[in-house]
Length: 259
Image (cartoon, rainbow, N blue to C red; front, side, top):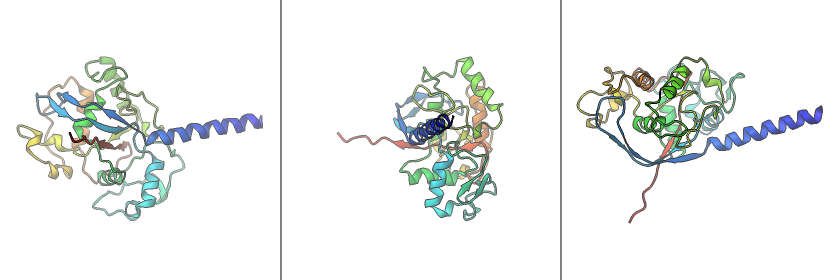
């Protein structure tokens, strides 16, 4: 019996270790053009880039705050994070008893997420990049018109406390990216730029919109209610907000070799 118990522990450690190593992996996303939900009926170009397979975990963010004291709960400036920042952690260097190391980190502000990615030599994805990858199911790069796919996403929106699950709990999509739907909402670099009015979002840098809400989304396809929910959620955010079901992942540019 003891041998079986020890074997079970060893297997659990091996699985956990493998998941940790996988959490730092990235996959290449081939760029293209797509018509997003908001503001324009013309195709938006997306360049090739690398994206994290999984969202950033509690264990990974703990290492980050150990190495960057200014992002610890007791030391972060109020300008960069509200009172909910890491509120589910015991203290600066220890997350809660009911939290798993390999669950996605949440209660993290946009500022903290942005700096985390920068410290990894990466960045937060743009809205266009995130939505481009999130269109995909397991077999198709664009499954937005598949009723079952949208039903899956909407059913997740109605399921409580999925942020407590570990990474890798949902499918890997066409690009090899996991957990874009079914685990946590995720920050983007220009999360509120969709609220910009005018002919095109490209007409403005949108810096002011990173810190306040804006007008209603001009949606091109209201039937895609799952995506509309994401844009509405982003539009309600401020960069210092820290929410219990909001995490993030990083992306990286692909350097084009000179001819």
